[in-house]
Length: 74
Image (tube, rainbow, N blue to C red; front, side, top):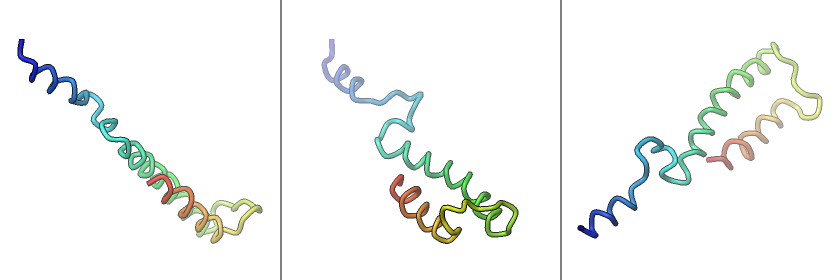
């Protein structure tokens, strides 16, 4: 039996889930999904179609989410 084939096969990641092959990849995927959901919500707040939370002003909420929600995920 060839040992090089065993070692080579053991280090490969499963082809069925390449997004999990590297530790950072799920974070980029989740950041893209988060942006896909939050950009329309932010546009609705800016255009006055959705009332923002009274806890933070919309501009402060946006700065908070970009700094801690999106950047830290990526």
